[in-house]
Image 1 (cartoon, rainbow, N blue to C red):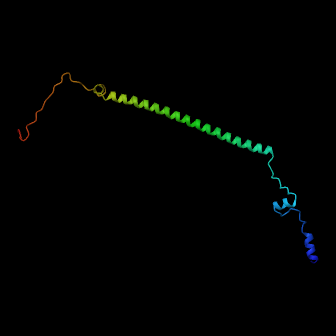
Image 2 (cartoon, rainbow, N blue to C red):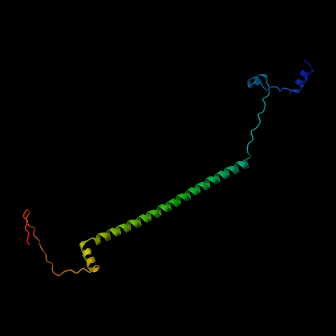
Image 3 (tube, rainbow, N blue to C red):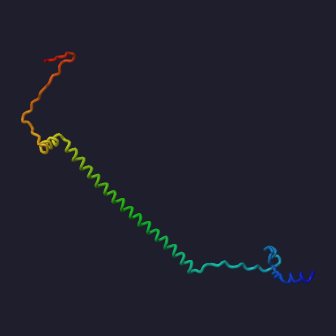
Length: 139
């Protein structure tokens, strides 16, 4: 080995005991376990802040949903009320139409509105048909 090889060996960091060994080899050789780097954990106030923000967002969503449901219920009640009013009007108009279609109501309307004059005496005229097959012509 020459000077170059010796310089390379000195330039390399010294090997720590137990580095690169398998865990079972470390146990056998008695080398100390290397401490693992600790995972950074967010501080507690930051976690509480995030939790508070998420809780507030959920609460706002819940209130908004409840408000929307109440609005839809009010609209449904208004439509049901309007349906009942229209149904009552339809029944009233049907009764009025039934009353106006009676023969007495038609007679009263003809007398009052169109000035129908009713004859005091009624005469019926009966016309007889000539018998079929015979042509009676008078000139």
